[in-house]
Image (cartoon, rainbow, N blue to C red; front, top):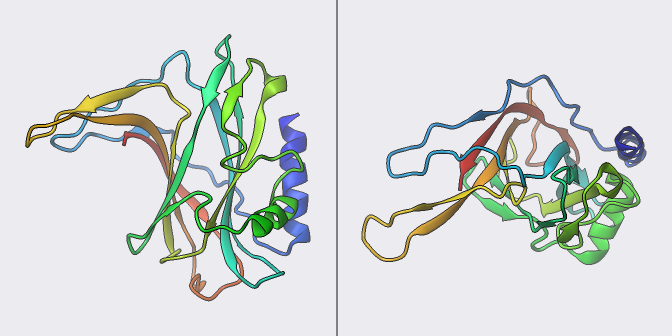
Length: 214
């Protein structure tokens, strides 16, 4: 079932004349060492969801000429019981710009990008929220869209909501503690001499994956 989804996604990407970021071999996911005052990364829990990242692509919407970043994934529940999925997807751009998944993305543009970049059953970052029943047959295809803003030469993706692990970080100035959650991180870069600020399309190399508390 998963291979069929990935094949459909690849075919749609090619039809839209965009560059698909083929996953490159990356080092095993490692937990980042905490900085002073930060929480140590919590281990995975038995209630964590099975999150399978797809490609991150830079796409031009042919109807408007506007550029977007699109990320695809599959999430499944193998915990033995129903789980709630309320993810948050953020991109940290090379110039420090932070983009929130779905924000400032026109509904009609998102619908067109679903048809060209994702599987027909893919859910956007809002539609995917809710309960996921246990079992591979209940896995959900998802896609996330951001307007292509900021420096796309280097991009970091943060995904929160796949793990139940969390911690509290004390406020050094007093007051309420800050709740931080186990967050999956993937670092990307555009290789070579591509000019992502003006390119209609671009391919991203995966540099490394990590888990942090955020």
